[in-house]
Image (cartoon, rainbow, N blue to C red; front, side, top):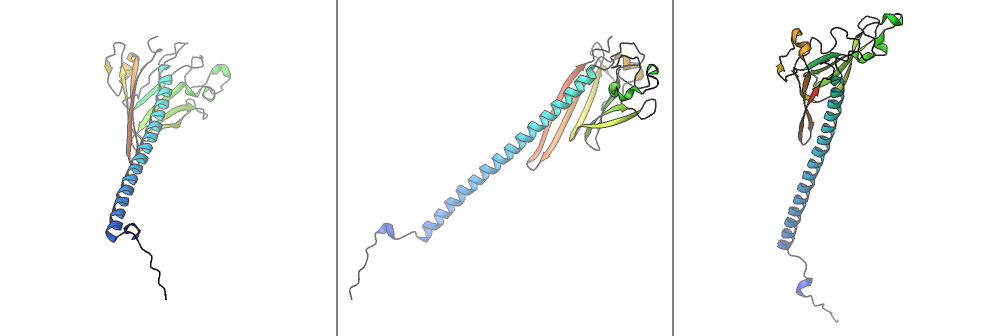
Length: 221
């Protein structure tokens, strides 16, 4: 019988156990590093996305509040008591405006035969308030319900609100105490607003604060 024996070179002998273990160890380190990079990227991407959403929500809310508070006290018929109202304090602002020029705020117009103007002008009496229990910033406006002053209809402006602060200043920018005394309501000329919003994610909280000063252009007229 003729036996043919194939010669094997050293490179054809395969891997030793030690070589396999070293290869597995290196592969594990590479995989661990890759996974860490992926987790960090995912965490950064999530926080950036939520941060962008929070900032957009804050800007939208503050723009709405600025627009309405800036117009507080619009009073072409010089109705008594139009402007910042009693009950305004560090977390709540209440204000009125005669938006339809009829000389009446949140009540029936006799000239319309008793038709409640709140159905057409519900935004003449507005309240922005913060509830720490629900962590919500809300907007209330008057709406007709058959009574003289109607009811407050509440809308949520922002969720996940950590704090809201209203500060009031007179024409010389001197602070006015809160809750605002009735005797000081007519002195208000500007309102400083600070809103802090905190939204949780699996990778930590996103905490953003926005501040603005609103000059109430109608209150000095």
